[in-house]
Length: 361
Ligand code: CUA
Image (cartoon, rainbow, N blue to C red; front, side):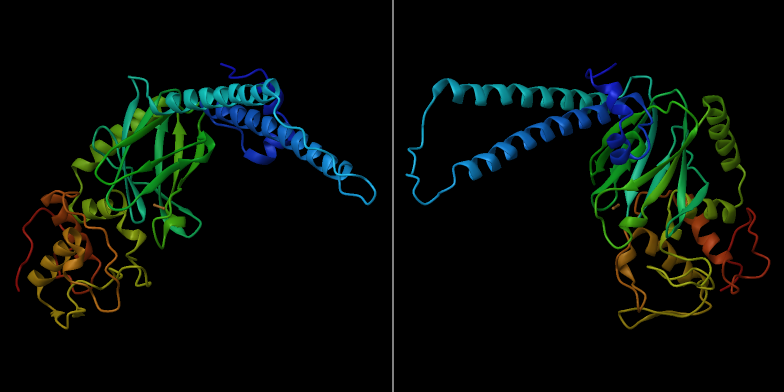
């Protein structure tokens, strides 16, 4: 569908390439480009015409000694009607094509594949229709834990989005669309990939310290491979040990490693390496005692659900509460995983199996 007659010429123009970089990855994206370029050339034409005339007249009719001041002409009804109605028609057309494009992008086809997106400081949590979270990560800029979000080629995909904390914005430049995520409500839009390939995803709404690292990859793969991959993740998730399940949760669904390192490196939050079982000073002057497994398990659990309850000295209370995000079973797994990263973890418990924990206290 060619939105306007100039589409083809503009797609290949030098300026179009300069402005957009990569060509649009879908028909809607290319429509959006041509609408943008149409408005750009329209504005450019009038800018040059009006500014040119103004400069010409300013020079031609400038005050000069010996030349009497001319009477300013005023009121020509036909002229005024013309310069009001004609531009209004063009503006009406711009609104029409823009609004039509917007509606096309937010109203998904009824057969669209639904992918849930939750934004939080500072990560994207993706949940597919079968309940799995994509476990694969990659490095983008300063973010070593950017999720890879797989989508099928040739099938519409609808992102249903919400936020746990502040405003975020889900922006895929190659698809020329972004949509805000808001706490306590859903927003959505849809895309359809035409070919296999990677596309960047960025957060386009300033949301705090690591806003610029809130990135991901949208990876389009053939639809049959996509179905097989989702099924494989689904099957895998059934037979993980608690430690393995916890690892997967903090990397994918929780996105915890954006702020908590596993290596001892400093981060927004405390590192998890050798954290469990060691004494931790809190900002209220109390401590989590060393070698008290129950205290430690409770501290981790509480810090996930209600992070502000106990703040470790030297850290700011910036974490988003995860109450309601994880099931009780998932919380257990995360505690097990964090425990497994500590050399104080009770011997024989790691790698954990299905046997009960807490041998002694
Ligand atoms: Cu999230 Cu910026």
